[in-house]
Amino acid sequence: MPTEVIYNRIAMLRAERGISRRELAEALGVHYQTIGYLERGEYSPSLHLALRISEYFEVPVEVIFATKPFPRLGAEPS
Image: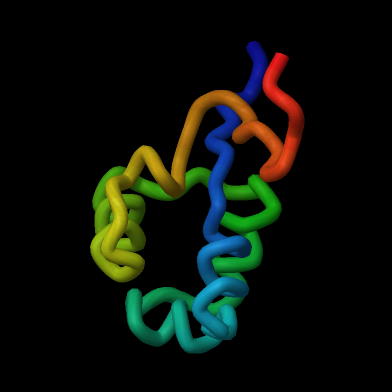
């Protein structure tokens, strides 16, 4: 059975705002390695953690997480 993959934009949001993995982890109360696992798609967040991340960045959860890969920024529309 294939693994369910959750795609995310955590790294992009962190970079935009100049936030380190450690800073985000501390704000969320998780280990900094958890942020790395999330960013690389090695770990899917619980619903609770996904909602806390969206609250932290003050954007809707679907802006950060998706079941399909996000289109590349600046990519030409098909």
